[in-house]
Length: 248
Image (tube, rainbow, N blue to C red; front, top):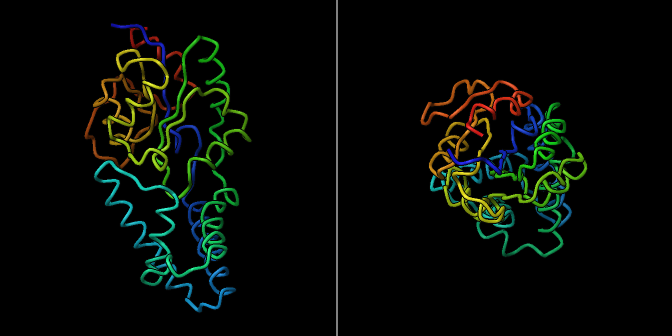
């Protein structure tokens, strides 16, 4: 086998660990911020109307993701606004739309998911071994630019040479193209790279289709087994030793 020189990581539930309650709190903060901005501009939409618009936006984006595509963060916010009231995004004055966008994004920092306890030590060891490191992540409701800011705050941003976020490239895992563009930017090829993530479809199927070797993190409970990883680990701190089993 070809020697490995690059490791790419998923972000959610791999390097940062989210919880359902945090996600719900972020959603409420987004909706409260949007309602406040609209109320101050003279609109009287109910919280329930905003909830319905948010759910419809989520379903719209999920349908786009099913095609292995994504929208930019600004496009997602406009989808949300236009589901509150038809063409509302075109009628809002700039400062109002900016307040809604700000609340939508910054809710992440109000209820941030903690970094995986093992992440810093594992990344330090892998960098010390000379691996090129990257992130390939679907972004959901948070733009990639905020993830960069958050990872810098956590002290792990500088471990990565390349970060590929779905809202910035308008592609969504498991798109092989998303993996290939990341590896190209890292100056390597699929047969020389490993992808690590917790999601069987997005990370394992995506990485396998891209021609990489893959490592599944965790038990993947409740996930359909649409692809098999080359290795499976239960904790991130198992990764450095597990790499020895991939013919490095």
